[in-house]
Amino acid sequence: MTHFLPEHRVDVVEETSSAREDRITCGIGEHLRFDTAGIETYCVAGWNATAYDACVVGAAVQFCDHTKRRRSTDWGRDIALRVPVHDPDLWRSTSVSDALHDALSFLTGDRWRIDFARRKKHFASPREAPFDFPSSCIVMPFSDGLDSHLAAGLLQRKHGNALVRVRLGSKASPRGQSPTSPSRAFASVPWRVSYGKSGSVESSARSRGFRFALLSGIAAFLCGSRRIVLPESGQGALGPSLAPVGQAYPDVRNHPRFTAKMEGLIWTLFGHEIQYEYPHLWRTKGQTLSTFLESCPVDADWADTRSCWQGPRQVSVSGSLRQCGICAACLLRRMSVHAAGTCEAPETYVWENLSATRFEDGAAPAFTHGEPTGALHEYAIAGVLHLDHLANLRRSPSSTAAIGRQAYLLDRSLGLDERDTQTKLEGMLQRHEVEWRDFIDSLGPRSFVAQWIARGH
Image (cartoon, rainbow, N blue to C red):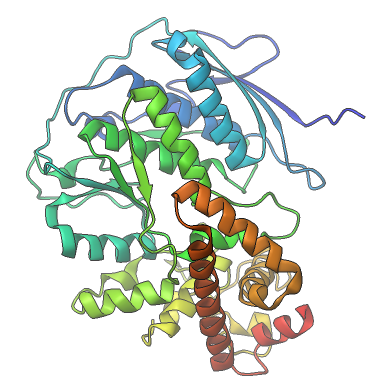
């Protein structure tokens, strides 16, 4: 029986052009906006048309991912996309096309069919702003999150100005830097995507991983670096694929198997060899935070980072933006802070009190958004059960094969010894289990979190 996936057909078009009759229009300048200031920070040593085309592809993939809702009974979608580029022969070549489709399909769980047309109008290169990079610079994708701040602090302490941040979050790069300082390069995402009147209709946003990996790969090519350091801990990089949520396709956006595919794409596009590195892969976030606090004791800015998945409308209290405190990302953060022996102000989170007996009683008294059993409640349950599932993996006979298979796949992606890989993976999972149990115990046996875990078991 033929399995039909929901179709999504999109044509990216230049100004004054239109999509084909059976296609959705994604207009450059209307839906895909390329920020001049952002692009200029990528002009580190002369602009490259292929780098610009890669940005168009990245923005178009983001548009497609957010404008077609996934069905509740079937994860995958059939996405047909056409993009105008300067050199369609390069993008249609077997090596580039195969690498692009392989990376996207593996990341998103969708069936992608991407074709390329020749641009009618060449992109006008912005002014060049050469930067003075160290001879052996290290690229790191840098968001507003805790992992980014910790990893960057530790790297800068060791390598100084050799660290080049590719900024992926909403915060601007530091001001007052020299125009030729590496800290001024890659200062923001060079594109913005508008999804039309309906806005984004799909929240899974797996294309986010493609955007992060692509921009850091482009940056490494432009500044002549071969090293891209990823800040994620083992829980963030491996946890989502080891303990997937419900029937969702495994989240591999930070997984070495995905970045290995992106290494191949960057090579076929630019002829530039890169390697994504994972210095914290075998550690928990709590261990990384502990190391950071020991190495950088006067740096308190880590507490201002943001881990929450929720938008401002969902997590504002009396007009002040907070983090929800109960999604999987927030729970991992709170567990890690506890494991590192430090603390945050209760007002950091909407759910100030995880020790409350009832879920709704844990929120700040002034919080009025939504119903007690609404979307935030579902996010909270999913987050708790994901972290608890991850903590029980080593003890579950049915998961033994999954851990072994993960070690085998990591061995192939990272070029490590399989037995050593499995030992390190089990060690990270054991440490996660210890930290999670200690965190839950600190909340008390009557907390709503402890009650959910008991029911889940």
